[in-house]
Length: 543
Image (cartoon, rainbow, N blue to C red; front, top):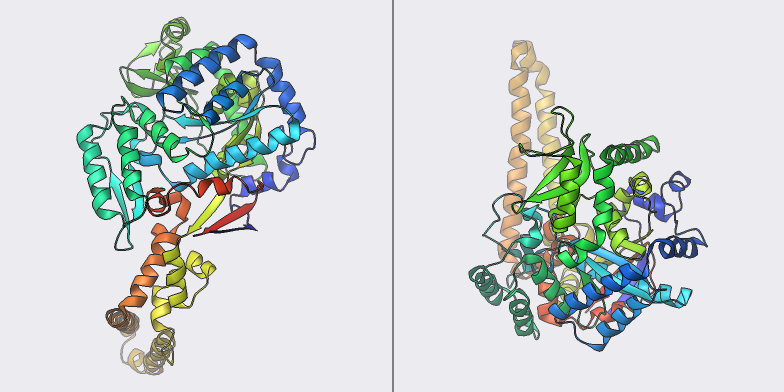
C-alpha cells in the first residue's frame, strides 16, 4: 500500500477563507487555526463551564453505551479513563446514521478525529479523547436510506431500504426489520465482488443490525466493528442518558427564543456583508429547536399570530413556555436541535476542544457565533476532516491499460477519449471538419434562397440544426461501434469511472466502505492515523 498527500483547497469559498486566515473571517471564528494561543484560550473557556458532576454523569453514559456497542477492549477503557480526568478535552466529529455507515467520508471523519486527538495530546500535555457524534435526530430519511458500492460488473450499485418511516421520524429511531436486513445482505452477497474479507463484512453487518431497536444504534455498532483498530467513542444524542445532560441548552432557547432567532439572522447578515453565501436557510420564526411529538419531529416555531408562545410547524399544536419547560424536565428526549443549534448542544454535553467537519459544515459554523453567544458559549476550534481518494489495484491496472494517469481518471470520463485516441485523424476533428464544410455550403447559398423569399430563413436554420444533429448521431454511432470492438477498453474505463468518479462526483461522497472493506478489510485504516494532519491536504491511498 502506498500513501501520499498533495495540497488542495476545498472549493468552498468560506471554508477556504477560514483555512487560509482570510481577514474577513477574523471575527467570525473565535479560535482561528492561525492564532498561536487558540488551543490554550479554548481550553480555558471549556474548563470554566465543565463541572465535576456533569463529567461524571457523562462518563457513566459513555461507558454504558460503549458496552452496548460491544466496545470492551483496552482502547475503549483507556479513552473512558481519559475522559474521567478533569483536565481532559475532546475532539468531536459527527455524521448522520447512514445505512451501513453511509459514504466513505464518514469513516474519514472518524480517522481525522483520532489523528487530531493524538496530535493535540502531544502538543498540550493533557488528555484528549476522540468522539463520534451520531446525528440520529434528523428526519430526512432519503439521505440515509442507501449505501453505494462498486459491483461485479464494475458499475456503481446500491442497496436501499424499502420500508420507510411514516412521517417525520428521526432516522436514528427507524428500525430496520430482519426481513429488510436479510434482503440487503443477500443482495450484497450476490452483487459484491469476491474478496478476502467479504464474508467477514457480511457477518459484521448482520451482527451490527440484528437485535437493535433503531437504525442509530445499528450504525454505531457497525462503525465500532469497522473501526475496531481506530480507538474512538460514540454518542447517540437522542438516548435519555445523554439528552438529560443537556436540558439547560434547550431551556435557554425556550426561555428566550427571539434572541436565538435574531442571533441566527445576524449570523446570516454577517456572512452576506463579507461576500459569502449562507450555507443554511434561516426561517424567520424558527426557534432552532424541534419537538418530537408522538414519534414525529416538528420544527418548533415562535407563534406570532395566535397569542401562544410556540407552535409546531405544519400542525395545530401550541405550547406555552411553561408547558415546554415541564416537558423538557420530564421527557428531555422529546427535544431535538436543528443544524444551527446542534453544535451548541454538543458543547453543553462534551468538553469540546475542536470540531472536525467537512467543508460545508465549517462554512455553516461561520453563521453561529451569535448563536453560541446567546447560549453563553463560544465556538470551538474547527478543523477540516481528512479527504481521501482510495485507488484499488483494479483501478491502477485499468489506468495502465488506458495509458492514463490517476488525475486523468479523477477529472474526466475516459471512455470516449480512450476509444478514439488511436484514430487518425481524430474522430472529433473529422466530424468538426464535416460540420464546417456543410455549414459553409448552406451559408454560401443563403442569399440565393433568401432572394427567393425572406421567410425561408427558418428553413435554412433548421437545415443547419439537422446537420449538427446528424453528425452528432454519426459520432455516437461510431463510438458504440468502437465499444463493441474493444470491450477491454470499455471495461477498463468503467472501472476507473465507477471508482474515481462515481455519479460524476467525488468518490468519498458517493461510495460507502462496502467495496473497499470486502476486498481489503479495514486494517488499512490505522495506516491513516500515522499521517500528520494538514487542513488542506488531499490524501491518496493506492492498494
